[in-house]
Length: 635
Image 1 (cartoon, rainbow, N blue to C red):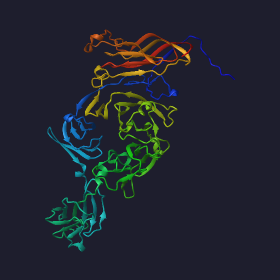
Image 2: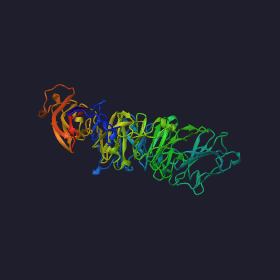
Image 3: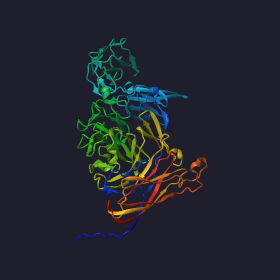
Image 4: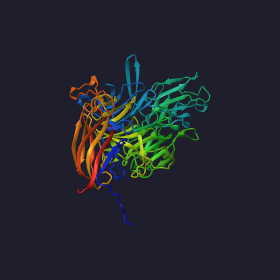
């Protein structure tokens, strides 16, 4: 049976309407052509559902370039209720514009605020920052955590010649250890006390003796006792004697023994997260040490200076590194890189063991794409996102049960994103329900308020986010503060995005124009093989104190300029008068840009709308056009 086509009579008048805009589509997937998305959407972002507007611009608020050295902004942090930034630039650390430390690692850093202390990791150092105030005078304290780290009591109830009960584990960050001895009647004359570790460092050994009043009395090395560091022995000049309190330890000795590489296990880490039982943020988990790529360590509860030498995990293949962490439904998800081909998201949950000690056993492992950028992790509401070689992926709560893989979320921007070099250096930030992924001076933005149904080209997903593309974002890092968006550049500048949508002064990038572009998909009418003659175009845009628009049409592969107008959508405001573009209109409602034209006998065409003027807002609400289909296209 022959297949019959219904061919309309010629000529046929067609009307194309575009509205309810959904952002960019860089996929070039013909099965998903949708005139609500643009194959060339630049510097436009969602405003309200159905409308796109020109992105707000940014400006430099501070510069950190001592002696004209253009060093990168590697981190910006804050203490509670203190709006003065703590800035890591190059190898220096500043409080506002005050230099407070000069031996940082020149790499992106991270910080964890715990109480009134900020713990900073930069891949080579583990520092703690705090401050004291006296009136208007602030004293800054920046210390290597090792110098302030907790000294564990490793043994209690120990006899002078050995034995005892293990109490706490050694601290990787601390050479010091304490042992407590109980002197019974059998050892009442003992002067020599054997320590558990040897040889000892040259650091002065400390000792205390319990008196009859239950008070610890300090004793001094070389005066009250001597130390055999080679053999780990402390010899008192006078025997301490039996304990004055039955059952209580009466000798306490603190000595020091440095183990090569112990502290570096933590100091060389570059990623971390606060996590604990039931999702409590009371311990610090760290990883990213290039010498132990599939290891991580965790601190003790409420003490970020104490990392036991036994509190570590070896996760997955030795050839696959840990890239970062997220928290999903009170479980800790550890993300491994793309080398781990099978189960690269490892789930752990905190619980108490039979000795009432907190442990973090593996509860599940999820298969999916491996993470590639350690600073790409961010939460879109409760959904964690991260960058892989296949795009931005998410892990949902259902994945904790192993019922699903990790899921793709960036289908519409992958066509451009995945061609970017150095994706491992991408940096993410979530702001205003948008996931910003910055790399190579641009930002790829996923809109959390516009999740769309799954497209058949992306089978491992339940939905996709609308995407936008922002140019001229020279960000090395990005952060938010009090619902404002900031970034730090590779050349030592702190930059802040404007927030006032109504002000023309908000629409520039550090004094440079923002080039906003919306391009339509190919428009080929009801029958792709018919001639089209384009006759009329209308664009409804937002009115503004000053705004303008240029229109182009793609005709047989070449862009033809159609019309420029800088007055149709303006309204009068005396404080913003520019006589070269003066308007008497007081109407602030949306305006229609319209024009007649004649593009003849083409099989398809595109529209391109541009606003590239300095300090001009711009928003597109609808696009409409009329054309006639008449005759067969002959090429």
